[in-house]
Length: 449
Image (tube, rainbow, N blue to C red; front, side):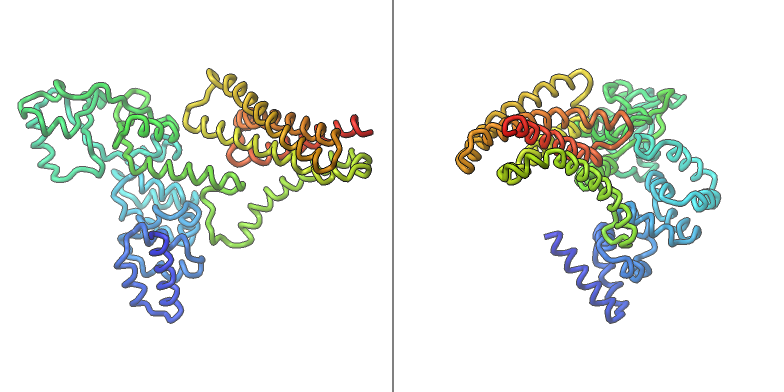
């Protein structure tokens, strides 16, 4: 249903652009949400994006850019002047959102814009910008409400009435001492359901642990999932409260990680712009095609060593693709499981060896079953027992090798600083192709020579 709405919006916008009906374009934007505008902006070719940009309400430009893909946002910001970007940043109430825009800017624009922001806002921004954007500190906002432990709930309630509003996703108030050290949290539920004369320290939750600003965004997402958090306090090295993270930021992290996993299988970035210039996309994808070509030549070179035996037995040429293909699938299953285990924090040095043993066992069991099936089929097809024996044994070897490689490759890639989600598939395919061919044709050379 949502996809149908977006498709209808694209058709309506395209029709209005064809006849240059500016009123129709403006009316469409007035009737849809910021998220729908962003989705529409992402899914239009770059020429149409330029045409609709002036029709977006200036007050919503920052919010729209935050909802678009990173590459789409970065390219748009490159086209805008420093003054236009500064005006967009002013429309964003949250410091973490402002920081997301600023971090997308080229260095020269970043410096000039920081100088245009007043000292108080600049100080808040710099407190967020001082952390990597993939850490808790980079995700946090500094709009938290803090209270003291030695005041009554009545004082807290009167303080909140004076404020007249609270930051979005506020489910708890953070309790600090006079030096801003984090002590605990007072949930709004407890605030509203207890006697107003009760002191904060009597009912505050001291079991609500703060997250350190330097932990990774993956760890943050895991904590929110494990403890069903809506918000969480962030502290620095001295355990001083410096901000909070809210569930909306964590949802973005989870979405980005999902995109990274899916796009990584094809060697693409999760930020890939669907309508990026063809030359840019060709250059990016060409790198991985080149790498894949090298691995294909490697596999072909291995086959070349067994040219004589292939000339003698046609059945080998017919069956040769089965063994590498089955090994590749088995290895991919293990590879995916290991990458997911690392991402969720479910896999580490304490249980890694156990997983390798389990995956090798799975490969052995599946290898025995499918080796028997393929061997039987091959014997019946070619009426040659030796052919069945060869492919059955090779299949068993490659399924075990694939399972082992799928468990080991992610660790090796991580140790050399390469993302397993992107490079793991290429390395695994090469390994299972080479091992499968050597096992199949090598045994054939011994048995049939």
